[in-house]
Image (cartoon, rainbow, N blue to C red):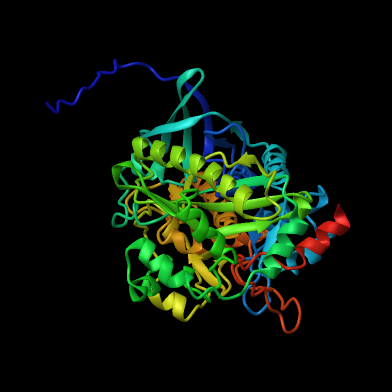
Length: 502
């Protein structure tokens, strides 16, 4: 008998604990910047965060590096304001291997930092901007207010409470506010994206590991047919596969220790792939496994727990993903201890606060990036910030859910937000959305009805770049070392730099 049980919640009054001009839901990568932008534009601002700290992926998610999206492909600056300010502050705190902002920006494809310090600087930015901070406040529902604005209900230690705001910036990472208000969403994408859990390993003898990697043969002819057979695919099918094709012998993602992987799988010591309940799967992800010795002379960061096939908005699926990823991390540790020189005494030092879906909901915006925008990038007049190395201008409409006034959605859940989800780009978009939400609250308008010239003036006043600045230097090129089996952002000078700092 398949009877669904339910409970009836009695009507009750929810206390409104604060009334603000702009409320930001989510204190992560985009949310911190949105709150800072709104406050700097003169709005009374609050930020609501479900964890006990701020910074999101750049802090509790253990990301540990900024993708170098501060420049376009010609070496011109496309970022200004707090994204650059945050990097400068983290460098000044001694939490990077760089002596100056200029050295960090020239370092390569990714700019490494210590995540706890990035979180501290995010908190300082909020406090200095006099943003009202609500931690351990889990958003649950948004209700329209007569005359405009929204009541944002959240669960906390004190029960259910509410914030009232004239304008809202949804930086929840899952478009939670927009969804609560019935905003239209793109075609179902929730199961199409993978999930990841970052963790940091310590007590690794990096000198022995480096020597082992140097001795690994570049080619392993038996690997590709072995993997195809293990997966139940033909070599041709595997080669064309979006994920497994990256594992083919000779590809940049084909790990140097392939013989060790084959041996471990044959011995039953490690699973490359495992089925999960509810249609899920976890597999060894090639997305990241790199020494970060300046974090410590024994430190490696891993991003190898790849979950697919689950819905990040289903609490049962979230539970399955979390449990599977954390278990898999320790299984990977055991594999490293037994099969990789230098890892014999390795431990897991810390894990990300959650297993994060790389994609999910995306709103249907009032405007969107068109296909020609990407193939022939140009800076649109209605752009609120610049993004990607091709200097694409992001229109305000891609952050405004269609038919829902007084709400902007910043981060990966914007219309086509997955394409510009890198942390620096999320920070830039969040900052601009916060500024414009504050301006809209001041004018008594929805953000989309703001005067274009006034909008641009407000953004530029706060340091947002709407035109590239530079060039920085001649013959500019982001350094991307070609190391087989090592993520492209694992610069080969990291170990030498670490020895100097250790």
